[in-house]
Length: 332
Image (cartoon, rainbow, N blue to C red; front, top):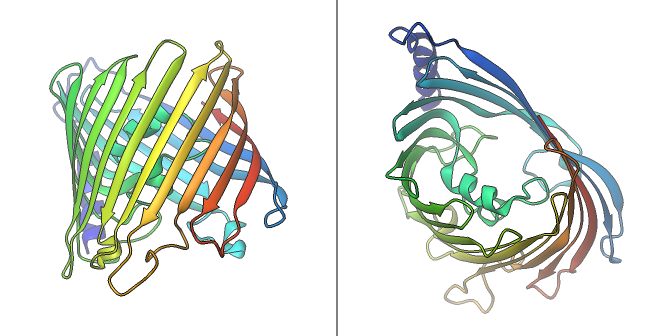
């Protein structure tokens, strides 16, 4: 029912918002396209396969209806979030973004299937989304896109606050329960200098409350060198009492010149030990990841990256993996 109500409100807003706007404004629109692809080759006996992939293709359109209102639709064509081999070869089309945005002075409000501010801030500083997601999104501490309302308010040129009310299910599945998630965050940012981000996600249910806490700091040491680090804590995973996860991520980029960059990143994911157990409850997913590589940007539309990445599992019964990747991003 909430899905139908949300859709109805969205359509009503779309047809009514142009009534009292200045006549001199001329509506404009533009298409968007973004494609991620790669070639990968396993470097160990446990994963020695090689293959080409088109990870994702984003097709969208942005339409500026008035000085204060815009709408965007974006379709994501990619694999489902399913690790089964048969599922990974499939391609599905999802509505990744379908929203209306209202802006007035320092306030902006997005309603619909919207991008989450927390993921946007981190991904912008990390800068290599076509290679690997930010920690929060990669290890499912939170959703990068969700259905609901997101509001952002800029206090001044370097301080902003954001709040959201969302379903908590992401964009690739329907609402599966009657609970919402409430998110609050603040961002301190000096352009070309540093970005600091503090975030909390409150997810109540009939049993236990799921919470996510995150802190991020990115710093540009010079025009060529930037570094970033973040801490994430998730409590009562899937509303199960005491099942907690925590994670750390650190990364850096060195700009060789206008076309070449070298980068590296280290992630650490762990879970706690429950009473009556000798091992972490999620030990099969715990571990550390390392990625390092080169990026070559031909122009504003096309990037390439040759990179090495590995996964070192905490569970000694699970084989470690290592891959060599050649990633490409094309966008308009």
